[in-house]
Length: 156
Image (cartoon, rainbow, N blue to C red):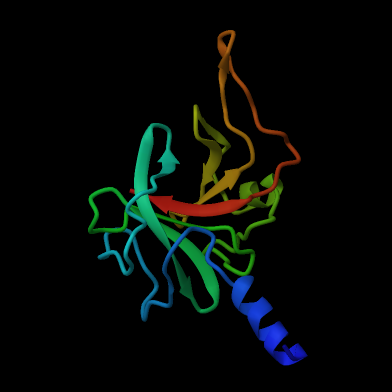
């Protein structure tokens, strides 16, 4: 195999979606409530909130990978990205720190037991931080003050 064929094969292998099946480019950016623009992976469910599972799939819009999910099998009920090239309407992206979230008037960090820590931005996008909040001895564990955004999401 020549080096160009090897490079092409490597590019194909490493461009696979984060979740099984369907990486597509929709003609319009998907929004909550829109008809699902892909076929969700039927045999897998993703945790999109504490105690809430959904089917989902990856989509690509302007070169940015998003994960979208549906609860009813028809409409988008969850959108997320871990791509640092995406910038929310508030100017926030993956990798930004808590200080920047406060500067754009995002909420204080909300612990959702069993799922994640997050803040709500004025635009309706939410920032998600590493860790899973737990209830221990009458108090909720907290996120590190040095944490950075690892995901931006919206949900119904």
